[in-house]
Image 1 (tube, rainbow over the protein chains, first blue to last red):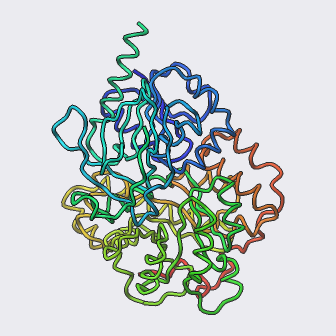
Image 2: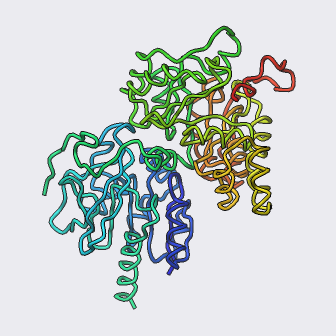
Image 3: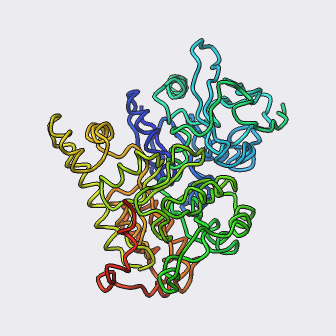
Length: 184
Length: 309
């Protein structure tokens, strides 16, 4: 399968490396035509204001809205997928809700359906303030949802690509595999 | 379903959560990659930078070109000015302390800046020692002119490196020299045999463990940006093609004829650094670049890049 990683700005290289490690072919996406033929898309962490501006400037907003395959957004990527931006995930997200870098942290998370804790790295992280009825919470930290699935959209307020643990990316690729199967 | 905001209380909220780890410190730099960090001297410029797509701003009282022109002792910025910029923009705000001036760094941490730049652009406070950066929760970025210097800063706890270049000149030549020294040095380490790395660590005046890590991984363990003399979209592309993770632009933007236009163009050039057609388009009609000073005309005593030990 071929996964695109939005490479306008941010931590796209680590996502690409992790996806390749799991056997996926990876394409860096900077222009709309690079979305053609992809089986899934990752919108990485970075500065959401900078990424949003470059998406608008290079005509990527509409093509990403029309993209029908699974999308995985981390941190800034989660913000861009919410109701106020691309509107692809039924979520309301508060930017920098935990505070400045001084409050950035890492913590063990409980992953739904898995006994092994998952180390979550939260960098000036956004917070999910409200979720729609069809959104499934896959992990929480201190009562706050931090990993969620809304249909074919997977979002995390932390950075699984900053650790060596590939489980969240594996779940995303499973989602991609299911969609491929449905379409086949 | 709505979730009420929970005031984050650091490690007390959850005994398993930790702030200020190396992963958390270097993690912010990872998020800045592929982006442009701009020097700004007031809230108005900070807004221009944010609107242009900067990933962070560096709050300082005078851009390096003015520090160079004015002379005298250059120090940490007024906290009131830093706070004003923090209130104006939502992107990370960085600020500079003098080399070795850990009290200035403590003040910047109390102000909750997002990154501290222990910078040779300010007048050094210590001619032998840099700040012990492990002692801080806020991450540091430090300048380097070669691989050994970069590794010494990382050993002291720097979570991000920027090659120095020669700040405040608008001349990119020293930035190129320093990138070639750092990235070329990394490639060279990869060609050495195991036992040769011990002698190489002595040559580099850097810890053996770090030298071996770089030899095995083919990169520095932290994000590496380029700074010093970047004035055009083409300069940004050159740095990215030579291996930089992103760029700092100091005087190059706000000392040019049309800062907003130039700032946007440099942001686009940093993303599309390998696409010459886009580079040609964004380079057109930007107005006057900063006038600049050729670094070859500077006296050794005027060079900022030699500060740092």
